[in-house]
Amino acid sequence: MEYVFPFKNTINLKTFLEDVTKCEQEVLFESTEGDKLALKSSLSRFILYSVCNQPELLEGAVIRCNCDNDRKLLAPYFE
Image 1 (cartoon, rainbow, N blue to C red):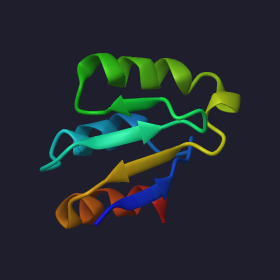
Image 2 (image 1 turned 180 degrees about the vertical axis):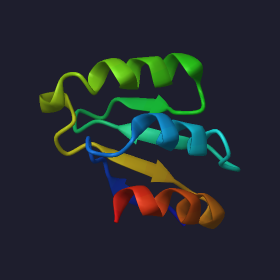
Image 3 (image 1 turned 60 degrees about the horizontal axis):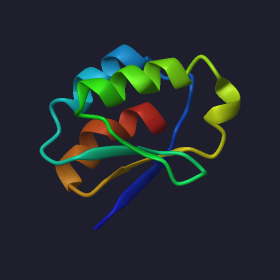
């Protein structure tokens, strides 16, 4: 099952990405244009940090994961 969370620029990005590294499976950031960043990748995390400085690029973006344990770990960031 796929879980989708709307990305919020108000989350603590540092702790969020630390928790992403604890996830069992891949976690993706997806823009409205269909660009995808695999957030377990150091390069992708760097790109996300850069994008967060341009909030207009974050509108409509989502976080996707497929594992229920990962959903439970990440859900507090999106409630």
